[in-house]
Length: 249
Image (cartoon, rainbow, N blue to C red; front, side):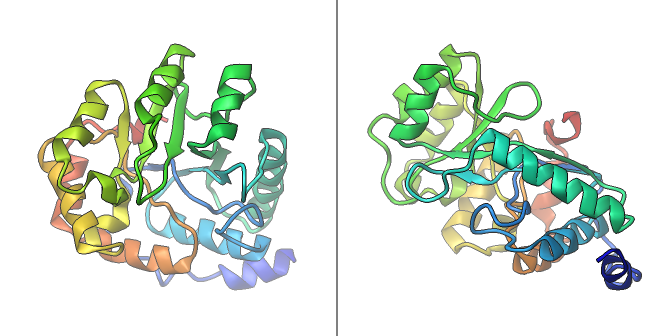
């Protein structure tokens, strides 16, 4: 297997002329193998790590989904898979720092764990990455935010530009940030990957200086292919001029 990785990654001629080196750290991806809808094999995970290195990253904080109904991942299971990937990446000779957290879906299971004091995987300064339904605003969204903060977490809303229930309600999205929610747009939104509306919201957030992290949300090579286009987007350069927290991780 070691020779397979060396043969696969012996050449770096796919490295783009522009990179994400200034961002340095990615704090949202689904690269850990076999845990969710991201990478399905160890070989594919290692390939993604090499591709992210080619894009300029020095550290990846990988965040598999935790959802009560679909992805019943646990901190222990995620850490075990992290160790396996670290070993495979080292065997492939790739110099990349790897860490893990999770992308928590805001459901009753999440709130129950919060109330019981069960471990929730965070990154950096107790940052807690969470997401909701894209279509329907949870009735308990603001209550959940209050509870996260009251338990000492710093909530980070993943890809705020993709929630259609905020479309036409930009001020409400900014109100969440005023309530202590950090905002993390997806890089590929800057290339219009998800929709024109998501691109517009991401750009408005950057124009307003209201973002805290940028994440790749990488699931597959399809996403890293788009990232190679994002590096030349003018709004990426504008975002990188903001006091983002990525490089502090």
